[in-house]
Image (cartoon, rainbow, N blue to C red):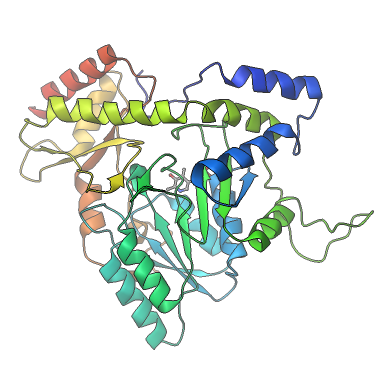
Length: 372
Ligand SMILES: *Cc1c(COP(=O)(O)O)cnc(C)c1O
């Protein structure tokens, strides 16, 4: 089976793991956690990084760090994975969903502003804007940042899929008030599971560390004055991530070359569309995605099924949140851009471990099945 996005070990993990086992620091503190946080601070040029047990935990504590609580509203793109919206509800706040724009597939600045204005008219300004960089593609940050500044609303970047991507030479994950990276097994590099929270504010970093370790007060006995979580990263997993960080650039280069290979060999087929990278936008091409024209007979679901039968895993794009039974009663600002992407799009196998022979096989299978 050729998978969509498989973990890709390098061998660089082993020396770090060896050190961790020899030191016996195999739980929630240790050298590799410190090292990993330091590497992220350097790589993304952000003063503070906190290693946590998942990207989802990082979004949760990031929102909490921005002061989101019961009764607040938070803007989220509708076109995303559910893990960017759920933490809003963990904090007993209400998500307001906003459509994508067709250039980047990410948050539409026009509907973002409309959502903010409407909320203000109703007497409640949104407390945060969650910006997601789907499949590694930067959002229209110039316009989004201008809106966030104008209305004085903080930005939480869900850069879970976008480690190694940049916008106007600035690394994604380091642009917002809080940034989040996921190190889950399917992402561009992995800790096997984990997340990194990035922030310019020392106070947020300190609070996040405190909440992530059961909010235990710094006294000689177990003293608690506020609710906490068990969200910290294990030193064993941090060791894996330290090894993976050494090959991040290679992984980005490889994923980008996979996208180019698909584009080169499939772009002349009528009905298949590729997603361009605007000038100044640099995507890690975490997943290579295509859109099928409405006027061809083959639908994404059929193509996915035929590929599956040929031993190839492909998937639909994210199903918009405002179409989910979980979230369809929440406010939504937009048209059908995200819905159209969901109807027409699919993600192709994009693992950095793919060989050229495997890519040729996938391309041949797409050519054959699209004509059926
Ligand atoms: C993977 C992902 C997350 C969640 O990260 P985990 O580490 O799996 O918890 C959040 N948002 C998006 C957009 C993701 O793709």
